[in-house]
Amino acid sequence: MEFQTEAVKACYEKVSVWLKELFGEMVEAREDFPGFGLAMGSAYCQIAIYPWGDTNSTITCRSYVVTGAETTPELMKYLLRESADLRFGKFGLDEDGDIVFEHTIVGNTVDKEEVRALVRAVIWTADEYDDKIVARFGGERAIDRVR
Image (cartoon, rainbow, N blue to C red; front, side, top):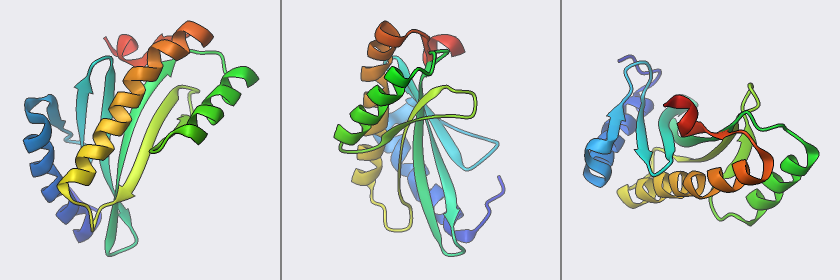
């Protein structure tokens, strides 16, 4: 795998070990970029390592929550309100209008417990909200679309 910077490589190497220790065989390393995939409950998340300048890195954990929901003002207001009340992460829309949930932390100073908190916060939030959003606004859970 090719790394954009040495900081990304160093972060990837330590996070790789921690994810395997924390989540075992549920973690799959990506071959196309410095990242990993993990499924839990009805949610799937991707953990990606990005450069932050030349000497730092970030870790973003993103989960697709719902696809195909109509992006009405009511749905947008709901996602904004829920994001405001959450401790970690935020809801957003990708370029296709799919609802995502993600959180980013600094990679250079991260420890194992921060990685655990990052992944759990994102995947548990996605797992909690996918059914709520589909029931109220339509669409389908992202995990069902992948299957």
